[in-house]
Length: 126
Image (cartoon, rainbow, N blue to C red; front, side, top):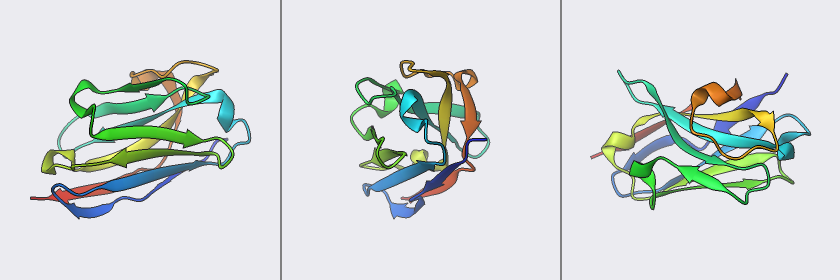
């Protein structure tokens, strides 16, 4: 069983920044791509960003490029999401997830991911 624990969410004013972290329990973390998704109130879960197993390749939702940055530290079994210039429409629960395929490239479909964290709330006030 893989345990993913997100942290770093909170309340921030529009224009502010937050960095989310996702710590994984497994020692094979470094061999899997990881992704971030979010679910806003009343909306479907959507892709935010993903990163390959070695950090060499990343993928972003088009609408978030330039404001969000995904990274990982395999020595710490942790993936990060740096969020800058936050907007009220970024308000959502943010989830990290592990890709179901080892040594894969970052993917944007939530069906590609087999383990999910419990989520962390991000609220952006106007």
